[in-house]
Image (cartoon, rainbow, N blue to C red; front, side, top):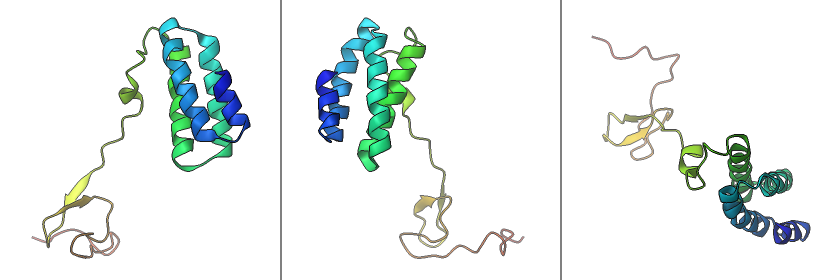
Length: 126
């Protein structure tokens, strides 16, 4: 973790997060909570200083390490998919071109079909 802290001090946030991930893997197997807490602290500092992909990666590091500290026997080091699974987005089929688009869309991204506003539209009539 020292090299990760050094990278953070040098302003190399992405490198710091990468090095912290490398230190966390063996710490999880050894259930070394001191290293895991150090990684959470480093990730928190990166989150406060960055945005975008680096921030998201630091957030994932903090969540993962916190989960490993709280439930050391329930979190396996390679089960991160369960922690960071993206929520399934609902879709709808465009009535003009039949392409799948997000349910929240008001305009079809494929053909430009415009859906009526929810306030003006009560659904199909019989």
